[in-house]
Every structure is written in structure tokens, then in C-alpha cells.
Image 1: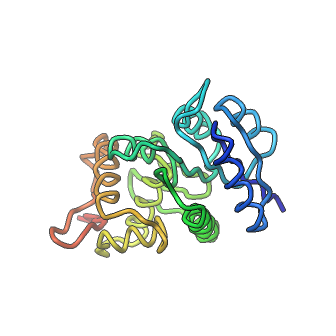
Image 2 (image 1 turned 120 degrees about the horizontal axis):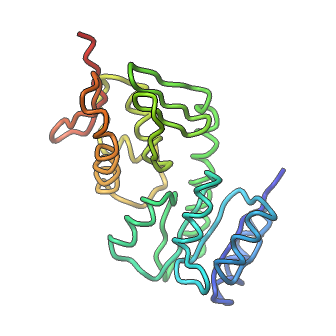
Length: 230
């Protein structure tokens, strides 16, 4: 079984520490010191997860994440010294699964890795499910969403949130429900992450504003997927 984890960082001390902890957990660490090297080794080894430093030479972590997302849904955790909301939101919006700010403890990194891989196991069981409504199809087998027959470009998390809501029409999900279901119990973020993803999802869904389904806000509670069958 492939147990490669790609660690990309231009700091040798960080590479050494993460290499040791990743190997101790039974994974096979692959190291890269630049964005270009990270891409080369990603395609050579097909790792099950990537730890990408944002500030790398040649190509930064954002660029690497974008290029990989054009071809793969492999879990990606961004690691950076930048901790402001703009960088965090940008990382999540381009498809990263999690975001760690330096300085960090190696134990925290491994907890994040375990949480992301557990969520991957859960989603594998659910990917056989296909949700369909008039003018809408959400397929988790390939993370494709069709609106009125046209593909909609969503990130992994946007697709997973949309699928969870649409698979349970009428059910109200609190922000905490969505965080736990989509990001996992070990996620360290807060409810604003859900609101940001819902906002971006609605913006992308504006092409379907005349449809008979919608994501509704239940003020003070959370969100639900509502279908008008009339």
C-alpha cells in the first residue's frame, strides 16, 4: 500500500523534524526543497498526502496546490508563517484541506495528518453516493457538480458541504455540525470557515438562481438544503 507523504519546505531543520515524525507514524516521507521539486516528486511518487510550505523558491505552495488540484484531489495541508485570514482563506479556496501556521509543534502536524486521512477514509465510503435534483447533480466519485447540465468549478470542501446538505434535504446543519462532518472532529478552525465556504458556494451557484432548490440560512442555527416541489 502507498504510504508516501510528500513534505515540501526550504528549511532543512523543519524537513528533518517532520521527516522523523512522519516516519515514526509508519509513513514513508518524500522530501522536496522547492515548489518545482515538489511537483516533480508528486508525479513520480503519487503520495497519499502533501505538506506544502507556502514560502518556497521557484514556485510557492499556493502555485503548487493549484497545479495539483487541476489533476488530483489528494489531501493537501499548507504550512506557512503567514497567519492572517486572507492567506488562510486563499489556501482553503484553492483546494487545500487544512492550514497550519508556523511555529507549530510536530505533534500538532501529525494530528492534522491523521484527521485529514480519517476524513478521506469516510469520504471513500460515501463516494458511491450520487445526489440528483432537477438541474443539479453532485457526484462524489469524481467530485463533479453539474448545474443545468454544465460543470461547476468547486473546491473539495465546497463540493463536500454541498453534497452533505443536498443529501439531507430539509435537515438543518449547525456550523459545528458541518465542521465536524466535513473537516472532522480534530479540526482546529472555527465556524467562520463554514460561513466563508457557504458564501463562496452560493456565489458560484448564482447561475442556478431560478432553480427549485437552494441553500437556506436558518438564522442563529445554521444552513439547510431546501427543495420546492411545487
